[in-house]
Image 1 (cartoon, rainbow, N blue to C red):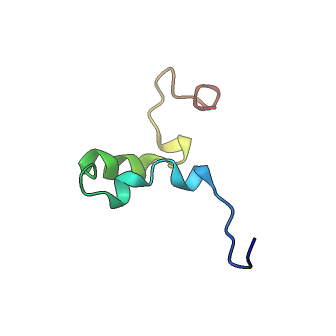
Image 2: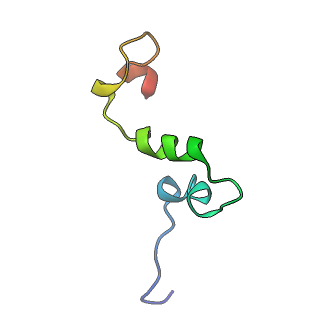
Length: 55
């Protein structure tokens, strides 16, 4: 391996196609990225959205 080797991170790559591929990029993809890592405190308090459910 060369000095410029960068380890693959699926966390950062698994959904990235919808960011750069105009064929599938849409408003739903933008909404997903805007809410994906939002703190749980901001999510609605309904059953099924708690910390244990999220994990």
